[in-house]
Length: 280
Ligand SMILES: [Fe+2]
Ligand SMILES: [Fe+2]
Image (tube, rainbow, N blue to C red):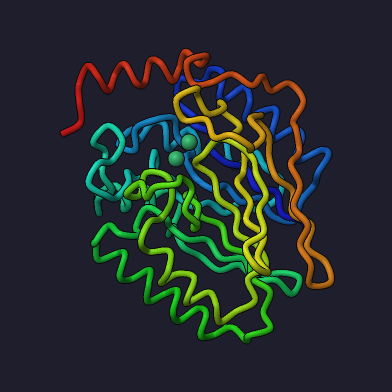
């Protein structure tokens, strides 16, 4: 089984650079990589989760993939938890409901080729919403249903393991929910975890588990939030799953220029619009 993970497409109904990149990704995936499944690990839309036009446009674009596509939400799709969400855009029931009305639930299970692929909504962890409790119950029931020998791959927007030296209150990873989630996933054979959000690529071993940070397709991390070590290039990740082993590899996509957010006029416009009418 082959899975392609794409992430952080940051699409807008205004089209522009991120959409041009997306079209190049679709062409490369459909005609060259030909996976069995495409997983989008969030930040589907450009900036603001309340922009219904961006979401509807992105849904139309995603249908261009030949393979089935499963998505999990990012902070720009539904807001984020914690005391200081970016630009004050917190995760709310209304925002999650708007996402679900287009994409379906943010957590899911997909069984194929002897593998179990789980999608999780990272922005619910620590949110205190009723939906967070529902997702925990779903995870508990799902892992209880799996034999200890099941080979599992998890996708979610923010990394499970701590990203920065100091805890960052949900802005970079899932924070204090990590221990509970790893405890639950400890009852299955966790082969790999693929996340997005950081706009750079890295592979790390976490015991028996492969941790993968997927690169963005829209823009690379800017100077202020660049980590030393990872690959700061746009691209996608290919997972080859065979004989109980998963191998993940970065794949470049022809035609993508590695610009940061400030090099994308549509991102600048969307952030300027936020400043003009701040979210309460
Ligand atoms: Fe992003
Ligand atoms: Fe993000």
